[in-house]
Length: 313
Length: 320
Image (tube, rainbow over all chains, first blue to last red; front, top):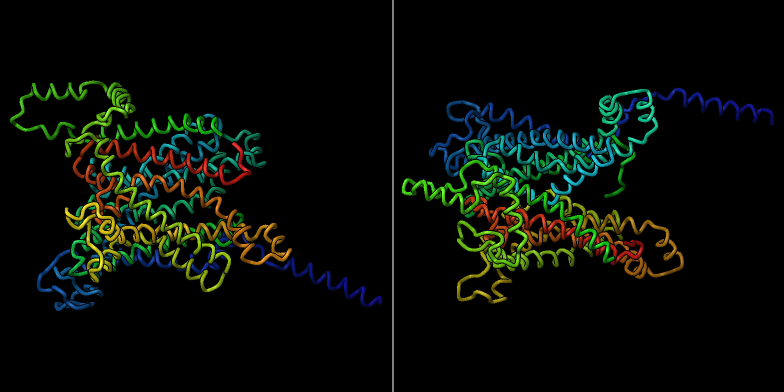
């Protein structure tokens, strides 16, 4: 009887010993661990990174991918051309004689560049509007939210097309047009986070200690709002890339010498009955970008903010 | 209810005002002279001055905006929304002429979407983690990631170019067959499929999510516990509540119904509002562009209002 009592106590002691020995992990270590458990998110990250690397490396190696030569019309796939130069023409050549894979990767680069640059604007405006609205509350919040309502009521794609058509199509006008129309989601997510953080005890404490609004926003309220910002940004990349592609597909985008995925689709549409496979490659890359960015966003949200984890959406 | 609707309508006036302002600025700030098409050496400067006066272009920005918007609200006047520069006809008349084609296309697509997506989403939710569920979710994810112009191009290639079963473009085959319902239906197959597949992807995901949420509630367990058959539980108890959020989606679909899916209309050369708007942008037909932006705004505001009212009608827990 006495023995068992001792055993139990010994066992309890072992238990606490076990707990003490578990390593303490920081927020970022936990976040990283959660992220790597999300297989689709990891796949999305790998896809995006490989596309970025390929779109930087391939055009640099393959040289002027848009240069067409009639002699190379329908030439088969190759890595080196007859002169021994590296062309990386893994998908062969088109009827007009351009390097299909080289052009595809150059266009992917343009699309991704526009997507990421537009997201910078989206996040910047979204964080500004959302944090000011959420931090101030009251009439400031009211006015800013009415502005968001107006922005949401605008026919987005149509405004972007009109802006680019009137101001002249260039990479920059497209980035600005997408950026200044797409910030509403980011603003609303940041605002919602700020509204709840505003009443949090630690923020009230910082305020009581005399911290300036700027310090409270940048040091105490923006870091916890990081998760929704990341989600908005990754969805924003997908949306921006698709918007730009739609614009170029409809023929309002940038000129053919700076082809994006949408430009390639626009050109391919013209040759639909002769070279239908030309539609296939840019559209696959486009779908890959959208899927990868969405999975990445899902994974980052689950990793950075386990409270927001949605079951089976 | 009525006071709620009236209050919502009053609250939406500032939003429409904002949309009108942006639509005005978009055109006003655009580089280039609005009278650019008259700037030929043959036109005397006095004539240009006179034109500037007629169009009110010599007045300050604010005055122009006020004049424009007071004219704009008088919709009973056929000339209220100005005259299209390229078509040389009143904008309101053009919109009325193009609206039926878009409404027909989008309405059919919406009907197909509801008929297909609700059962699909339900099936996926009731048989969660089954093969059927995985098929539906995979389809929904791919459909969601596939931009409408990619899907439209694929369908156009498969349906019209490769197999040659369906017509390539437009709404009617020839002038003689104009207005023949069968002919129009034949032309509608590809664009409707392209629009519906995309929205089925979104809707079935949504129906599945709301259905799952309802299925996990206590009253469903109670219903099962008292021995009701699974059909009765799923259809009578669960589906009716799961459809409440779905009904609001109907209202939120209104903007796309009115403003139209411009891209799909462009691919299939559908003579609707969307292609009218795109053409207007390309040709800098400013009155039509402004009308189109405002029309989009009205559609969004109206859609939200309808969604909220429908929500109150189908969900007795909500009181206005």
